[in-house]
Image 1 (cartoon, one colour):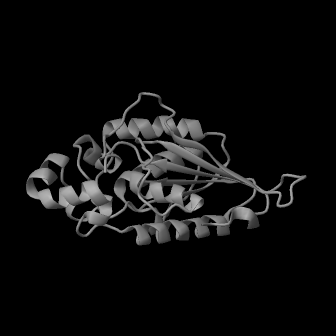
Image 2: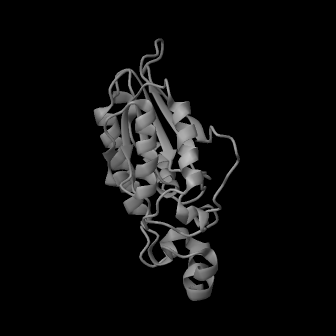
Image 3: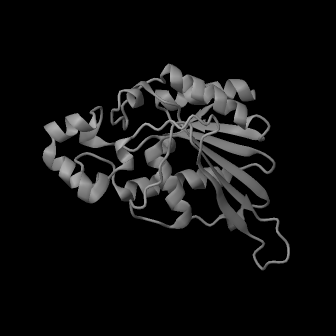
Length: 229
């Protein structure tokens, strides 16, 4: 579990799932498969960029996959940020044998692996990324973010629904797949740290104040397999 008490001051860390991709639209398990945004995803990103205007975003990081990078560049243009930092820590979880397949195809081609997935989530899928690696990756990300945070500036990370589960869990010390937090396209999460409070022994406060908030309000969900282990 990450100890945020060493951060001096107030900090906001935003995490954004990418907009709808062509893989989402086709209802595929994407994992590390590289799919561009759909036109609906580009519109989601443009509308979400408006929500971030005025929120002091000083640093923008992204997964290296195309659907996240394109979302991040749309935001960068709107927010006047010259750089998008690509970070492997923000990459989607590796979905192994299921990558690039629909649920229907998985059930037909890999029935035993599908049954294992129902029992064990991604721990039961050949070639998929395991809990230990995901948690370690999320902790590395938090070390990077906390170690380079600038007072008065917010940090925004564009990422994926799978690894977002572990970004959340790393702050809570939770090392199991369940519960799973639904995460829609362009769903926003905000983690705030405030070590300026007076009158308390540690003067420390941290909270998740947004989880899967979608500012465009059309209620779209992609029904990703990840949500139904």
